[in-house]
Image 1 (tube, rainbow over the protein chains, first blue to last red):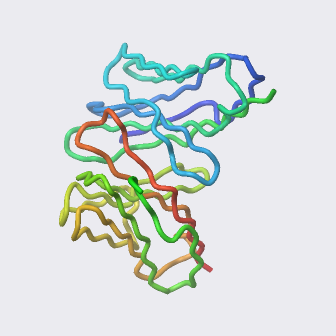
Image 2 (cartoon, chains in turn brown, green):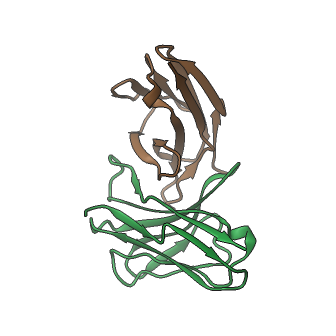
Image 3 (cartoon, chains in turn brown, orange):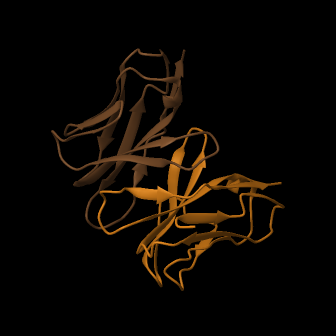
Length: 111
Length: 113
C-alpha cells in the first residue's frame, strides 16, 4: 500500500536557524514527489516536483532533495513568514492518479 | 479571474440533507480532483476526473457523487450528509505534466449538524 510519512509533526525554529523536514514514502513506481506549503484557512500552494533520486530543486530559502526512500525540505535561515504547514505528497504507479499526502509538518519561526 | 474557484466558502447543513459543493477552473486542465482534509488524516482523495465524463473513485468515495459534464466544472454532491462528512473540502486541477504540480482551490468548510 502506498504511504507517505512526514516528520517531525511540528517544528519551532528561531529566525535564522536552518533545519530540514523529512518525508518518507513507499510507493510503487514513483511518478512524482510533491512539496506544498499551506497557510491556515487556505489551500495548499505548490512548491516543487521531484521525479528521480538525486534530483534537487531550490526556491528562495527552500531546497528539496530526493532519494529512493525519502525527500527532504531544507530551510536555510528561515524568516517568520516561512511559518506554515509543509505537505509532502507522492504519486505512484501508472494506473491511477491518486496523489497520496503525508499529514504535514507545522513549522513556526519566531523572531 | 484565472484560477480555481470553490463555492460556497462555508456551509452548515443538517444530517440527511443533500449538499453540492462547486468547483470551477479557468485553465481547461483535463484533470480535476476532490480532497477532504481532516485533523490527523491529512488530505485524502475522494474522487478524480481525467476528462469530461470520465470519473474514478479515490481513497474515500462512500457517500459522495461527482459529475463532469464540462471540462471546467467538477461538482461534488453529498447525497445524504452525515456528521462524519464534516470537513474541509479542496478541489484541485492539474495540467498533463507534473512540473507545476496540482493547483488547489481555497476550500469549502462544511459542517454537518
